[in-house]
Amino acid sequence: MHNLSGVFLKVEESIVQDGKTLYCFSVIYPKKTRYYYVENKEEYSKWMQIIQKATGYSSLTDIYEVKVNKFFLSF
Image (cartoon, rainbow, N blue to C red; front, side, top):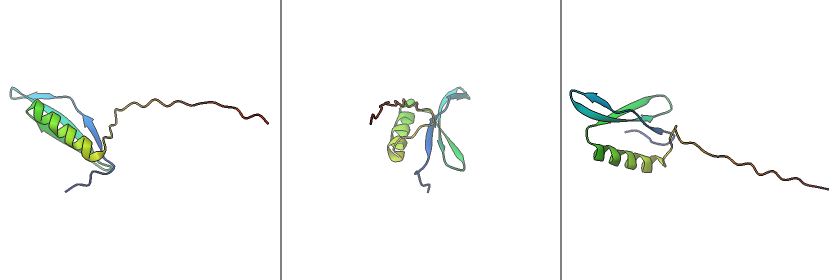
């Protein structure tokens, strides 16, 4: 059993092996990465949704926009 706190979920490129498309995602733990492959696109989507929900959805590829509001104090 693995603890999912502090892990990241990453979408990997799908591969074709023996004529079958394998959809891949990785779960990145602090000290290791595990790769998971599924043959069915719907099953892949379900796994992604469930793991995203369980981890609070943290992705290494998310882009955040940070805005800084400038204000001045006058005395």
